[in-house]
Length: 136
Image: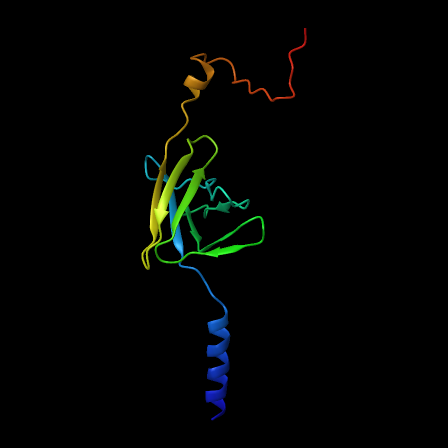
C-alpha cells in the first residue's frame, strides 16, 4: 500500500511539470561537417541556444521571452528561427512543430570574404562602427 501512495505522489508531481515537444536542430556545413560555433535564436528571444561542439546539434523545447513568458513547443506551433555561426551566412527558417521526430537539418554556407573585401586579397576587411569618424 505504501508503494501505491508513493506512485500517486510521483504521478502528481510529473503532471504539474510541463515540458514542450523537443525540436532538434542539426547545423552542418556544405561538406556535412558539424559547425561547433553555431547558435540558434528565435527573433523575440534574447537567449541563444548553442549547438553541441561534436555533433552540431541543439535540442530546444521552449522559448524564454524577455517579459518572463515561457513558450512551450506544442504540436502545430509555427516557429521562426535564425541560425548563425562566425564565418558563415545566416539562415532564417520557419518550422512547424510535429508531435514526434522534430529534426531540422540546417546547412550553412561559408561567407565569401572576397566579395566583402572587393577582390583585394592582401588587406583585411575594415568594419566601421557608427561612432567611428575619419580623422581629417
